Image (cartoon, rainbow, N blue to C red; front, side, top):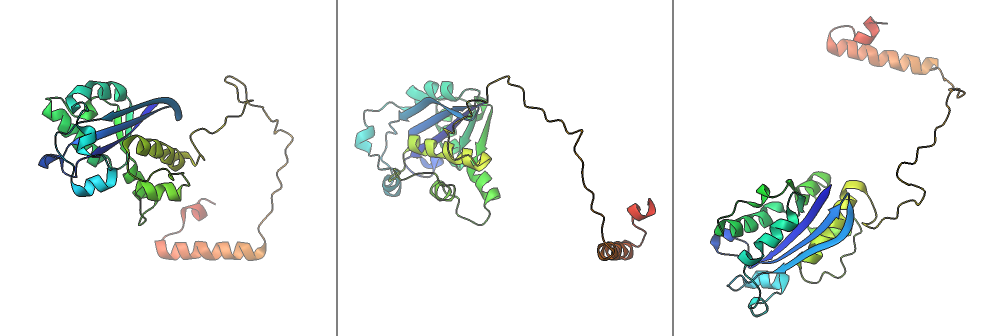
Length: 233
């Protein structure tokens, strides 16, 4: 299974009001293992970032002035994510921006190029209801080291998200978990002969039988009919 963890940085919060993508980071996993393939793109938005957004990512208009436009890198992005499951934290936000950029080119939305999209924020809200579920909060909760994250960066955030996702879905300590050298493909599992195993049955005592009968009597009373397992006894 091929999965791409994706994050973006933007000039602001509202693509329909002219905000644009300025950075894209992608990390590839195949069968839940890092492949080493990444994609990191800076994009010239042809506008300044809002002050609040600039405080988050620190990417200035001057730095982006000589970077390519989104239209120039779109094919590279779509080729990288093609036919993969794309995993994003707060997917509606990033998809809103990417779909807006694609629509400005007359291209279909991102979902038409990938096998599916999964939102780790929605997953986290189900797993940890009522708790903070930002990427930083999940890193702290799942013991993922994000000490190098002073500002938001798309590639770093995609890498952190991949580690968070692995921990959320399997409890694995990290992405580079060592495999057992004896676990070679095609090796048959050791079989254990259970024919000689004797199971000791411990019968219920009088007190336990009386308690069980009292529960059945309550069930009879509440259901208005004899319980099925007593009727079939």
